[in-house]
Image 1 (cartoon, one colour):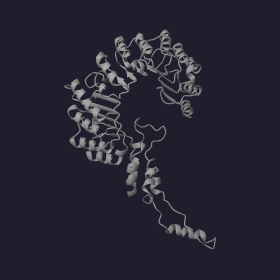
Image 2 (cartoon, rainbow, N blue to C red):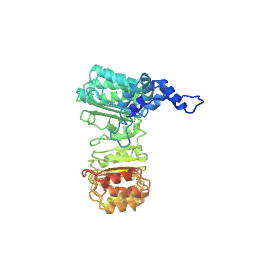
Image 3 (cartoon, rainbow, N blue to C red):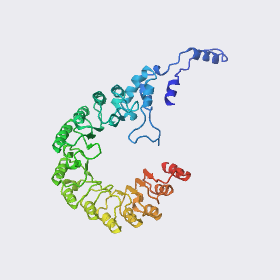
Image 4 (cartoon, rainbow, N blue to C red):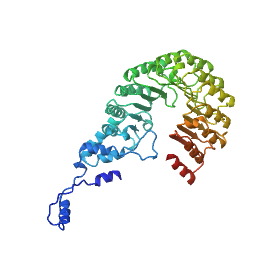
Length: 460
């Protein structure tokens, strides 16, 4: 509808009519307007059309699309076809257009993702200058793109003019993908995040990865996050990045571990190299007290702000408290799923680190009303996450609203927690004056009319 409006709208200037008779003026005006040619889009300055193009393709508020996409660039292509002036206008607008900031390419998928090299190159010529985050999916070409496709992808990345910030490429054989990735990085000196998946990695050694990452670091010195994995989304050589290649990227902000981290010397080397790291992710790891001892004797002790023990992390209550006591700047903590801790643990936790601002309780964490009261009364929480907390009673809502945290809470995430219905969520939002972000999910069938009214009220 937007494009139809643009194409059909006519820009006209009211003609100047000089007449001694007021009766004949309307007739003369109508005749002049009919005779005068009315400019369409071709008559507008390219700069003005480019400003108009910035509004094309944007998704409507609350319209669901892929989370990292901000709209549909198809509208820009349609506008580009409207007239000759629009071709230049769209190319100019693409440099700063939110819709093309996030782009994906799916070779072999057909017209939706650009089925061949020519389509990919054309997409780059039109949208490349505005692309900052690029995702390349190779599953539709059996994870083994042809030479023509690889050349077209190189051309697309070159068209970003070195402005690419994030790059994600799904599996291709390491023998091909290694050098291909280096070529893409050579054209992307401002890259900050890089995710690469490789197949056929059985013969790859740690020395191979070290050599590869040393080259990557030289080409993209600003990299803050690098993830190298195999086709099954596991670490490329079976070792977490904090124990292997993260040391090559000194701007790394988050140290990610995997499995059971025991390479203590390598971990210390990584911490010394990555001087900007202030987050640690030990999700789904087996965390021994010895590992916590190692981390606490590194410079992380005085700079770590965030520690994640998401999902099926195996860790003792004692080690969690050791973490809370030891890391002096810790403000964010997430706990594992089904974390069996009672009231005494939560009392000890808030005593060990009373400056916690963000707390994420894992799936079915066995937190009851008394535990929640200790947390919300003792801490000034700005973020709270509750996931399938089935031990909470309806009194938990008043527990939060009457707590110290009610005056500081800014974001709330609730997933499958029965007591927190849409009506109770509305009460929480109304009673927490600083809250600006709410994520709520309850899988109980279709939304009722009451829930819809509650959602509308929360959004207001």
